[in-house]
Image (cartoon, rainbow, N blue to C red; front, top):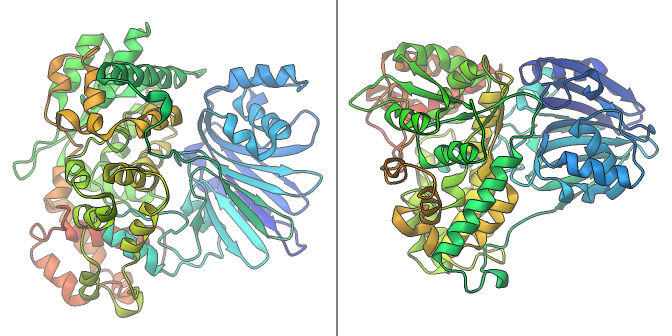
Length: 594
């Protein structure tokens, strides 16, 4: 796990190495264990390293293959790299390290852009062909690892975070009205390629982009499950599906133990993280370190689930650590969490993950997390409602159920020039759901949530907050083979038992019944949900700052109405409307965007 950056020139000029070094410096937290730069011809690369696999200097990046044909930078982990290394060695390739990065380079030399189809893992990388000057950018199937792009005439820059691109300079920081519409409609989800800034885009998940020396490029999407029932699963009953899911998850968890440093688990005490712990124990893992976080109660809202995480830790004998965060610590931690955001994210647990990651990074460098199970296996309470309509009515039902507000409400919130003419978020959902595949209404909703919403909300949150402390988070529920299996699973098996039915059945083979049958928990941060004193003061400060007044992003009357009753105004999803607009403004100010 690391941070990468680079610049490609198309105008005959030399790359700005100083700008690449500034980007690399901004990525230092993602890679505190080493740094490097490389330049040749029209390309410069930068890298910050977090040592997880091959702790020697032989694993340093940027890395050039043994025969000097390609150079690359890589972020993430290819879990099947030992098997691929042996396969490539049998094909005549030489290795000077035991790193997965060198496997990526040789895999590219052998299979070209199809190398990504051989990788089991999470990754973003850039590979430069020395002979042609061609640059290849790629991102993993579920978008677990980010890759941001800034294109200007004659030049392309790329980096693992948006703030790194800002550090390089010369970025158009005007607001993108389409992205703003998504942010305010879709609970801060801004689908690729958009970001909130006009001058920054992101490579979509499961995409390889080949950039030619003249600046032209071609994109190839190399993976997308069909979300249909498959012939090989015909005749499978509930027990067979349970066993298949459990075995696929076992494989996913086992894969994510590959490391030259210890691997811990973020244990909330819910079904998902508890399953990871149970499977690791079942595999014979001993002295496993587990970590939980909780918050002070506010407004009658309970802020921790330690009773459940403690139960799981006792059941499997883990070395368990719990962190209780007082409300006044939340307000002081806000600025650090927002500084770590590549894009503005409103979910409360972003602060929780930031604080937890700070503490966990003092103990281990790698953790497994239960992120993604609810989207992949239909765990949220709204999925039965989404499943209860004909397939053709699903886009409208999805927007009515999940969006924060209808399109028409934005006219009373935003300054006029930032309004889009039509409901671009609703149109995005309609177009995504119109793509072939996805047999049922639930299939369509899960496809959208898993491949768009999950990528640009929960997954991005985990990456940003953990990597801010040099902590690598691995997410077995987003193992692409497990996702393919879940996509083919009959909807009724996922919806059973209040949601995640097939996963709960798997859990009953390993976990205490109190964990499997408990009410669904969340990651609440009551101080934000109820605008506790210090948080409200930070919000008011940001919205009344000179920068906010000059920007005039939101209409004054709307802001005044929210500030007059900070805990009353809620979106359709129940989120605090004041927090939603304030977070955007605080993010812009934090990153120096005027």
